[in-house]
Length: 76
View: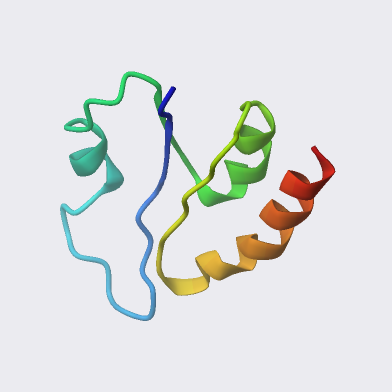
């Protein structure tokens, strides 16, 4: 089953754009299993899931999650 974990939009070396939020994307996503969380909650949210394939993309310092995600996936 497809699942979406959408993180809050945050500036990645640029000024935030007024009115542009993750909720704009989230409300139009048709995937029935979806959550919108802060990036600080990502690892705890992942640990609740039964994941076979994980696709991740983003900007800014989101790459800091590569190590923790890999370690968690390998330990499952």
